[in-house]
Length: 342
Image 1 (cartoon, rainbow, N blue to C red):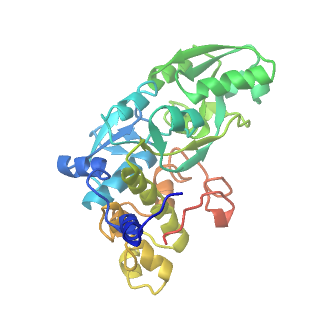
Image 2 (cartoon, rainbow, N blue to C red):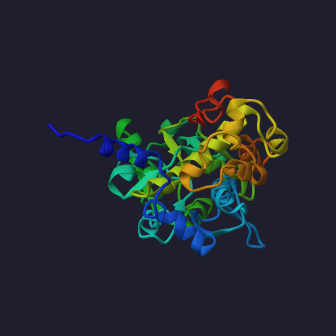
């Protein structure tokens, strides 16, 4: 048996509550020294990572990048966006080209344990489906037996497609490409009978079609796709920063704190709101951030609900209803559940 002196025990305890050291701040220190966050998004897609003619990025996943930048710099514009294909996204993150990945990426066991990556949470619960033309007359995924299907290569989407057809003893011919824009053009040009992807992505892509109403998303959902931001494995503090910015936006919605009232809420007597906004406790300081890091995020971006409705909600071209979906708050029929700010 090992024996420890009281002094050794006290020293160990002090380490648990001491400020994070320089090695633990590696990514944070690099981001601060650079003056901007390198954030990886996908090829332009409405609602999630859209690129305007003026070169301005917007979207739900873009707002995750902007939120982290706001927490660090009090300026959501301090982001350098890296638009990459699905096939190279993990390599670009693992080798240090980007500080975080925010591009509708599914959390899976292999990705979480074998690629040197760490998922910081889930910002959108999704599932894979199929898009077909109304003129095809297909009303169910079971009607795709023998079909030619466009699918992104190097993705869980490709694996799920094979699993679904195998499980249902159906056949299909895949048409693959790592570039989603090329794949969509192939589909619209008649190169395949159906296009498969996460349903949110199908809705986003359909919204940009010349005649969106000519296409329908089939009712079946063939997979679970928990999507969220990703960081490199090994820098726990950086993972904490991304994770708690996300949880903070969800917690803010639950507590009724928004971009419109965050200044007013600074005077709230609610212990939970006071901890969230940094008036009590040292949650921010424990990660190398200011105590009011969530005030910065909420002033610039708003809470989770604001981000959702602004980018993919029913009043946008993408038009994904949140009410009654998995992406509703846990106390409103969904499963969106923030860890407590305590």
